Length: 94
Length: 486
Image 1 (cartoon, rainbow over the protein chains, first blue to last red):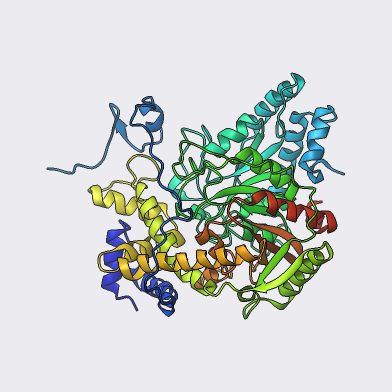
Image 2: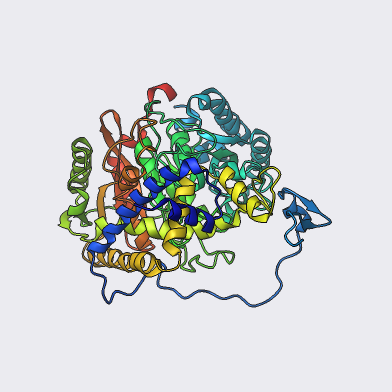
């Protein structure tokens, strides 16, 4: 069973605010999923090459050339807060 | 026969002979959506004005003699595909206010082909789920039984097709999200080989597993849709350069001599008896069509779900880190500092299943656990892919059930996430191996549809579609229509 302190640590790593009241439920749910995941240990995977990608292909590279035009105004239409073409966030440095 | 019961080939013929206009077709389906969708909730957005405009343009194109096979044909997109100027929510509060500034490649190609988008389809939030109940917009219902789920995550797509609200739909499949809802709703769906269809503009869940594909009421209709969706795209660096086959050309071919493998692991404990009977009957039909059936083994199958619930959440936790409340998406009220802005925007924007998976992923990737979870899962992924490679060198295709049971009742799955995860046991291995697989209607169990799964070799979509089409020429399961939506 994952400890409450561990749940809070994971939530912080994932940048998810959680209420104190939710911690027990998360501990239970995440522990259940990890118990499922532990079944992987039944398999002997000694010497098996990890498979990161379903097709054995090399990552394609493109020429390092400018191909896109600036569409800042269009993209910022979806931003919660902008000013002079900049994204606004709370003050980071006092 | 009503317009919503016609095949794509029949609709094409009617459009070309001017027996119906594209505008009339769009109006027919829009009227059906208006009449029937309140009971189903299969659409998140209905784009009536855009549809009628596109239909008018299609009619001009047909009149000018420049029609392509899908010009003037209505369709609807899963709300995971970005659509320029149209809300693209991914079933999440996080993107409830997001109007996509560009089209997904799939959407762009289908627009170019002259299809007419009716709207955007409901889905599990960020495609994480097996029931379509985790949508911010409420659950979609199964047209065969309104007390049942339609499956997920492409549940809106499957339900809209089964109810005749659209003749074609797009879906995406990360662990079964095209095949399982297709099975639960009695429609046909194809998850293509990884890399066959561009992922550009398809909101990412687990990038090494996600694949978009066609959903329709028959294999023939899926072939038309896949032909227009598939192919190389420079905007997706994992998209394959393999040439696209003509998926409709082989549809008439005989299946005599085809070898079919039935994995014993797909017929074991946990498979509902009535589902098993329907699958057995479907396999018997293939025997009658001249196929040779033999038992095979995929011994690492039961490791697939555990490995998937490391790999998919790990990739999800990374992909979903872009939702930060700064550039787009939901932002919390009055953040007191930047971390508070991130943490509360994400906590409010994401639903509980998405949060669970992000947290599992963050845990599996965190310092000290990487080898035990992520690397271990990737090693198991290789074992599973090797199982398929070996078996598919001995047989042409693998067949079995899509899911161990029929669609469950609404409200029964989300309480126990692990039990829900385990129901994807027959679909998840295919994504880990990156192979193509279909679900086709194969009868009913407990009054609800059953899907037969057909798994093939990489890039063997044309063969899968032909096999499915031959079955559909010999059976009429795919023509069954839920009475309330006739």
